[in-house]
Image (cartoon, rainbow, N blue to C red):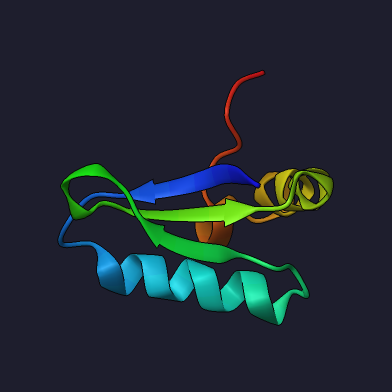
Length: 68
C-alpha cells in the first residue's frame, strides 16, 4: 500500500469524497489516520498508475499527480 492522499485534520469531507470516487472507479482505497489525526488514503501499488492517469485526465476531481 502506498499513501496517495493526505488530508489534514478538519478536511474529512474532502477525504470522504475522494475515497468514494476511488471506490466508484473500481480502485481499492484504504482509509487510515496518521499523525495529528490526518486522514491518509492508501492504494495498492498496482493501482497507482490508474490513479495517475485519472489525475492527468481530471485534475479537478482527483487532484494533481506528484512530480516524478
